[in-house]
Length: 229
Image (cartoon, rainbow, N blue to C red):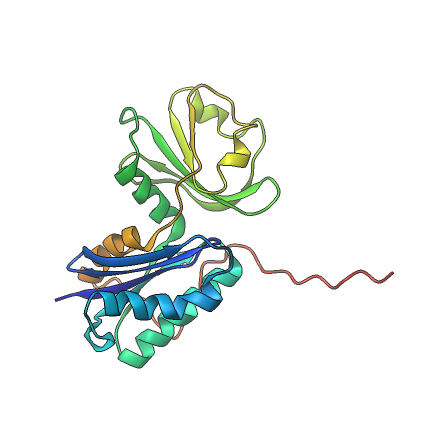
């Protein structure tokens, strides 16, 4: 049996879940900012205990690979890799934007097969991490860091409804005003969906090289020196 632990730390909160044969056994989540550093290990222990399983029964770990919060991704991936090393089990990674789009198709109603999906993660100011996908989750535009303004997506919106969602979508609403633009800001990446996607990759043996794998930061993390006065 495939017992998989899923870890999601791409945004301000974090969540963990346990799936067996792709079916959810238990999940724990918190949307408290910067909670991964203090809560993640405890959440993992609790989700395994509440499922009446043992860590030695795990057959793999699924982790949200980014883009997203630099610190959150670093903590989540380091934890996932540590478990994989300790238990000699494989690591599966899922792009966080693709996770958001998968969740959206599972939890939200949308109109027509021509509709496009545009997950957005906040990258500060008017920049977002985003991609563009068809209604059946095929990639149309790859993952990028994009500055949003009044001209964004106007070519596509003329002929297609586009659903914008994720924690970066709300701030874009004031710029993207076409009637074909629909917004949902209440979609956050969750481990309970991550495990479903991870199970599909695990069954196909689409796993990572644990030694070489790094989060998908997309942008370099910059540490600025304080200005002298």
